[in-house]
Length: 464
Image (cartoon, rainbow, N blue to C red):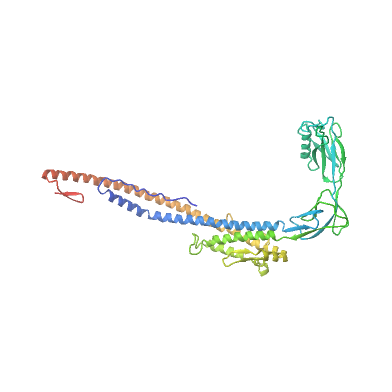
């Protein structure tokens, strides 16, 4: 908002004649008359400031409305599915983008296991892993299956070797420290476990020889899917059962018994997103309403209000040409005050009976349906360059700048007038004061000559 204001004119005049007060009144009146255009310009600036403030207050709810449409689009792009499993002790499931509603089954044959290895004690027992190690070499070779990685610890301790392995070979093994001795006589060793399930062997060598004292080979996890008698092997307990359907193997299934995973449409996120849209819509309706009616705001009569109202009407009554393709058929309705509400029960019933139809009505921001209509309409209002509100704000800001310039120029004119008049009136007052002094002097001479000190005054002149 503009912060410009008109500085009050200081009409200061100090006279010395008997007519000083009258001269001051003349000066004040002249400056007041000259300031009338300035007062009008100031009133115009206040109007523009109020309009600018109103535009800012009306922009916020429309930005929120635009954001609610973006959130609705994001909800559709994210998972709208939910999953349930018949036996959570064997598997758990999560769904993500790309998953399809349906029923899936899986039989877990084996959870599999990881290969493990334990280091030798070295030439000396490691009782303090922060200062001692199983090798003094600055470079070691870690082999997992057929892959070898060179490990270069940053220090000479067993602890630094663990850190180096977990940093430089984190995709192959996980290293930890274990104490195979007692509390009073600790014997710390390096323990390695393969990251993937399977029988890959683990070996660690330095320049002097093999540093592994014992190792055990793991096994792959196995499972079967419905309709297949073939066992599937996996080097992970997390498997992709179908696009967007990730299953975590938790336990072995009883022989011949499958766990059922149901992937169902979940309208709850859409219901929440549409409720947020309705709230934002109602705030925008209220913001526009404050500019209409008996106590209308400064935007009353502005064509922008008509455009905003039309946009809200199209959003609130959206239909793609038939009752079944309207928002109203999914529980969204307008009341007599123009406010939008979502009947969650009606929405869930309609969505569960025709979820594909709901997604078709909603569409996408670029593909069609309600979301494209809403995106295009609100972009026309809130586009940073060509949006209706932004264009109006720009026009008002330009008008405010021009008005401030006119005020500055006009005030300069009035100030010049005041300065000149003050100088002229001060000169006149000085002349009058001089004449008054002469009259007083002459009157005194006559009084002294006639001996008559009694006289009548008339407009400052003495009469014998």
